[in-house]
Length: 492
Ligand code: BES
Ligand code: MN
Ligand code: ZN
Picture 1: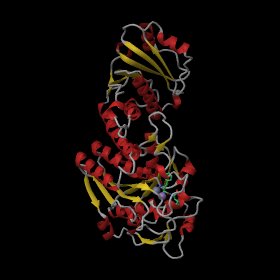
Picture 2 (picture 1 turned 135 degrees about the vertical axis):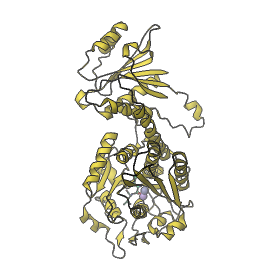
Picture 3 (picture 1 turned 90 degrees about the vertical axis):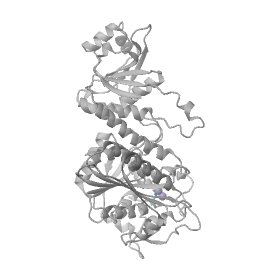
Picture 4 (picture 1 turned 30 degrees about the vertical axis):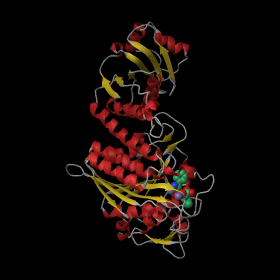
């Protein structure tokens, strides 16, 4: 599929499916649309009246044009109030239109939206993101993926009324290739996405986009003293992989950053086995932080910003066997801190602890970790909002800005140090699990123990990485959440 901004005026365009956006309460046709309406024998006005189209956000009305004129289908797209319409509105509207165009089997489609408060130079990227992400279909696990993919419409989408912006449209495609990689990694089950498979995915990104890759094996991690990470991997038949993928710009790097993604390819809970109703069957998604990390790496390799970025994943599977970590075991992390394991299901923080210590040794300017870390974060913020913890307000502000631009929701949560009492252990430096209240906060406080001085933020993405229902450009299932926020933050 190809997306281009065309300078063609709407009255001159011809193709299968034309979408026109309207703000609510602004349904009077401007002179250009009035001319188009005249050319089409008044069908726009008629469609507005007949379908009682109001221009509400998400509203759509569709008409088939008779005869062999320049257009086959006309779609009115509601945008809501002009003053509330933003980049995310553009993405959502573009997604709706792309899906209508596909249903209508349109080979060539075009869309024209009024922009008002939106910078036209920023609009193309958002629209293209909405289209690419809405049309992404994952048929890898159907017996006949080719047949499923038969609905390959549309082939061409023209954006009318926008200045040409080939660079932004290309960037959108590169960004979405990262989001789609993340979605496909999260959606694929644990018998496919193993720690080794994450490492080979990192290798493919390195080979294709010129990043460098270092993979530490179990022995290498042991030599570095990564007892917390290796404790999680004990019971699995699959070898753990510590993945370190580095993007270095051609010239001098303006900044040096580290991104760490939780890569637990399956979380059974360990001997504190997840029970009935715990959602154990969804725990293939416990590597969504690593998926976002690799998705961002793939996009960054193409976008080539002037920033050095270290992408780090301590990948392992949390299983049970005769080798399993016992509840009560004491582990020593690579910074020397000891941990009493009072719950083997709080495994993500153990893998992240050693990854944080490793990242800090790289002397980066900032570290961000992303993890499907706690059910408690979903209880606190629901399925659509991720939690953000940091002691650095400047970093919080950067991440929030990056997230708003991406249309992804984060909410800053407190690093309430008095809650660390809940992690006190009579025998080791700390326990790995605190009491149920404030469970996502004590998880963040645990991680904080493994960062000494580098500005650091923790993102708990347990809720938004998976969607029960399709919505806008999110299809049901893996969402690819956080990839676009990370990219915006890196490009800063
Ligand atoms: N991977 C889970 C968190 C999770 C739960 C992610 C639901 C997505 C959906 C994590 O490893 C975990 O098991 N956390 C425990 C922590 C508890 C033992 C302190 C939890 O949230 O119950
Ligand atoms: Mn767990
Ligand atoms: Zn987990």
